[in-house]
Image 1: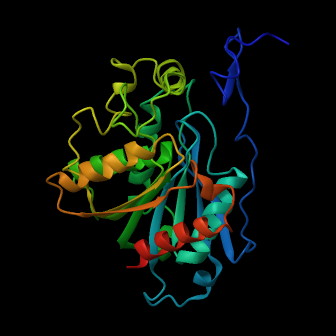
Image 2 (image 1 turned 120 degrees about the vertical axis):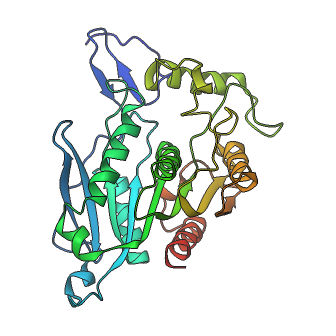
Length: 316
């Protein structure tokens, strides 16, 4: 076997071999979609970009397929962006398939989970470009489930980690480009925002941890960034980025006290609240939890609490 160019402590997600081959160390498993109800939810995959061979996975409560067709079957539309440091995972992985199934069953919504191109083969901004293309495809009513079930007066965007970062940027672009219909709300769970310097005295001070995150961003995710992790794609809080054009009515930010992105998430919510944006921002904080804890233990008390807040945000 060819030796890899990096050591495990620097790259927990992938190995890059001398011939350029990328070996992803997790997030490779695929769970098939099914029109046979699983946990009272049906799912299907639909291609939205033939140019890049990208699809969305759609989730629909099975009971929705049995409702009448006189306009009483419209349910909220949730557009979801997965996490994975822009490097791993997909809407088809078991962790995201199972999570979105639970969200759809609980919130009674139509969810569209978006596949986007991954680094290092496709560095940033490919993920953002693909995500916006997916939103445009969804808003073009190109699918029968969207046409029949999606209530475009109740459109929500959500994501975790890198997907939460993407959700922020999609909200800003929706505001700048006057997306119509408008986005009602955005949920950002443990958003992946960062910067060269700690945001405050409680932010991560460990130089090794900060260097590791910088290494991944600057060498794998976005090697063309002019200012490293201070790139406005990543450093949303401290880069001077204007958040006042956020194109939605409300934002929910979830943070975890044992997550490296904890203080950045809180600072982001504070920045949004102090800006000229006219919407409302809410924060839910779990002090004793780590990054994306809810994806790995859906039945824990704190995961259930987060799911309930997610539900309330969508139906209120």
